[in-house]
Amino acid sequence: MTGAFKSWENVIDQVYQQLEPGGYFEIHDAMFPVRCDDGTMPDDTPILRWTQLLVEAAEKLGRSLAMAVRFKEMLEEAGFEDVVEIQFKWPSNSWPREKKFKEIGRWTFACLDGGLEGLSLAFFTHGLGWTKEETLVFCSQVRSDLRNPRIHCYFGVYVVYGRKPMVSSS
Image (cartoon, rainbow, N blue to C red; front, side):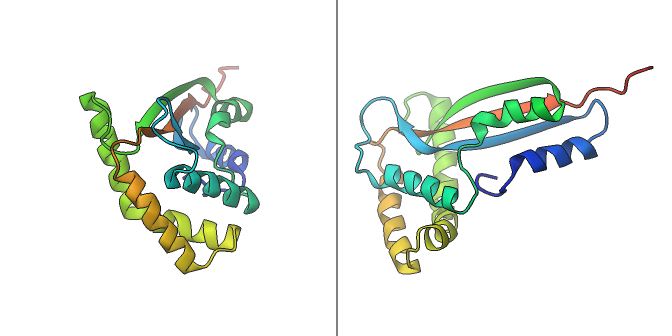
């Protein structure tokens, strides 16, 4: 749902209002831009630039890509109880050595490789004023980085869930 809503607070409030007492709401979202812990992603890398430009375009369109860090706070403000936040690192491809993270990287790559243009076109053309052709050429550069296992970048992913309070007995 990254960038899907102008007001996450309104969405969370609507969920809270519609949810039965004692029901749970869970939300997952990625953070942009991508990160790297080992220096294998130079500042001029297309994948880093792509995610930075997505953040810029989304802000211009009023659809922040930096909301996941606030989900816990927003659920608590809406009235949810026992709110839990879990953070993950999702590799951009199968670069990790660990089997579990290699598999997560394969899934991340499959989603991004097949959806790169779909993720980019509206943001870049409407938010940044790029042409469709400019965006598609840039996406081909990003795709090369996505396929490069020597670039050890990842997305920070947040999972947040909470429970709507039970109806009081009074």
